Image 1 (tube, rainbow, N blue to C red):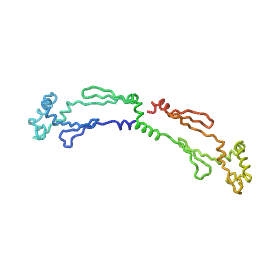
Image 2: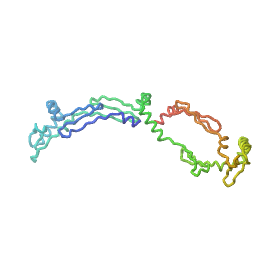
Image 3: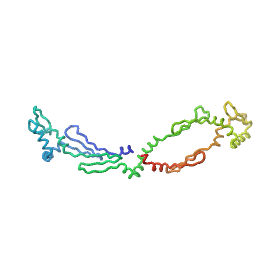
Image 4: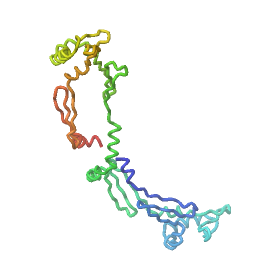
Length: 288
């Protein structure tokens, strides 16, 4: 949201002319430029400026302290006076103007609220939070906003992994969202639970079918922890215990129902509904 605001906001600038001749270039939010000519404005409005009590008071004070009269140089457009040492001192017209100019203010009230006061003292309240709430449908329908939120979610989300052991020995390493690792040892689990597995009707049925089709009896190698049989050609075939286990294991599912809704079913067949959109709405205060 911060990036969106920064990409959409415009900035006014006020740049002093490189010639240092009292001119400034102001650029507004629409990139329109206006040249402010301090010296020229003073000259064109000399009557109003030097009839202003605040200005005449300052000049009077300078005149009273100066050893000579105030003079004006039409070439350099400067006022100056001679001090007690005989040194010519230039009068800074900018300082005189600043004493009489008005200043706009922008006050941070906290909680996303600001108060802007213009040159005439008129105030306007800016409530960023309420503006976002009132225009949320437009803001969150904007592709740029959606992309930024997507990037934020992707940068914060965690991913579980299940990696097969490089030795190809029936072991897998599962890493959860907290980076905790758990090793799944298929072969070891089969060995440790052989009694339960091979007393299971589904397993014994498959082994029986293999025995009936095989040309030789099923044998078990305690060194390699493998079951095998001899086919019609006399070739020894290894029985894939993983396939047998998979026929009897349960699988969790995560079904995408669309519109940000998902259904998760665990190994016991118990379902849980996940509603991303509603979760964001219910917790929008904490999220944003």
